[in-house]
Length: 600
Image 1 (spheres, rainbow, N blue to C red):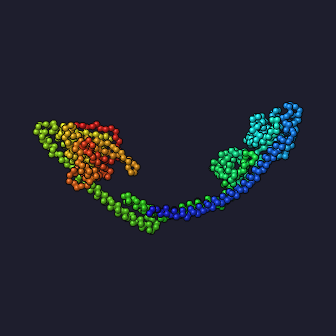
Image 2: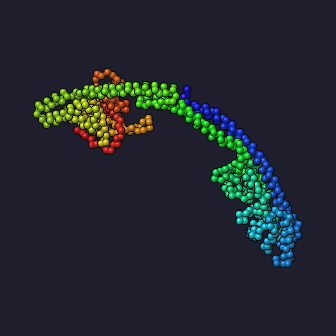
Image 3: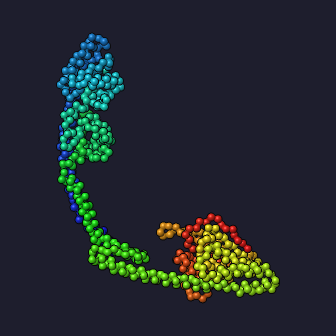
């Protein structure tokens, strides 16, 4: 069964009650928003549709007038048919100007009618009287520029064309009357938005605009915020004009805008209303207030509730659990603070009394264990007595008989150093350098005994020589190699090699640990198969002490000195001989260069 804390269960219970209520409120508010959006979008869709139909009707009337004049009006039909510079051509142009001037007064939504004679390159321009002079001249200049290009003329006779003069967009339409002559009409798109100038001041803060199919705003009720609208976003929204409405984002804060649009059936333009969604939500002040205040109110209540529960229940329980965890990890010095609740205060007093008693008992046991380990370590170290002393004395006696005083002196000196190192029972650790020097003393003595049948090599890494280890850690393996592995070979002498280096291994905690690796190998007869199996399985170290006490002592002393991080591995070399590998933990050893090999 999965366990959970008291605080988490209280929070979960609170959440199970408040979250469904909050979601019900959100769902209700969302539904109300959708209803308001659809109602607002529906009314604006009708408004946009009616006004777009009116704009299409006015553009259609202008097209009909151009078509009628190009087919039935005598003056228009004869434009361009008279010789250039003739009186007839001049009278014809005057009659056309008079006709267009009279006609434009009946079309208040249009800016101007115009006619163009390609032969004489004459533009006849009749504009509304209420248009400013500068605007008239700008339109006249633009039309002259357009009509003087024969390639453009033919392309412009197909549909309504969008033109830009000084940032103000307009539509113009051209029809050919014959004899390379044309009639046309020009209308500024802003004229169609003048009746809606007050739309921006209503409660919805809507924006009415005319845009092209590529998202370019052609005309709008004056508003600087429209400059923040992306043409690509607006184009995407306008292409969905078959829907009731579409949503887009604009501005630095990426606010949502409702877009209600209608495409013209005559020209490539859209009439659209842009309504900020935020302004629509203002029609639901109560729901908006609740949707914002409910989470804040729930959080405030939860914080107050959790604070009360934490002070009254969770904090005392947490202190008690922390004390138990400290006791489990071995720290019995922690004491719980008194609680304002009677029940928790009794628990704290009982826990503190129990912790104090356990701490005293732990200290007593730990001190007794240390004393026992020290006594055991000295006892085990005192058990190490090299069994070759008798042989050494016999060898000294033999050398003295043959009057080999130099060898007697050398052997006596090394034996004295060997004995001095061995009987130091008050020392619990020595450096690797001292251990290797002691072993070399021992091997020199063996070299004297077997001058032609024995060799040895000692290799090491300079930086590990100061590493501390129990005395006589490597010595027993060297002794066993000589006692049990010595094998007289005709081709080569019996050889012992001792090497040291550092290896790094990863730990289960994700860190790395350096180990000093000491290898003792020889080329003798190797381990007996049954003995090797017991050594590799660890069974050998669990047997009663009867033989090979030196190896057992090394194993036991290393466990006392290092803990369970040491290992001793035994193997036979494929080429012959035995190999023993000791792996001892070290804080940090960085190998630099090998010591020179000592060979004899």
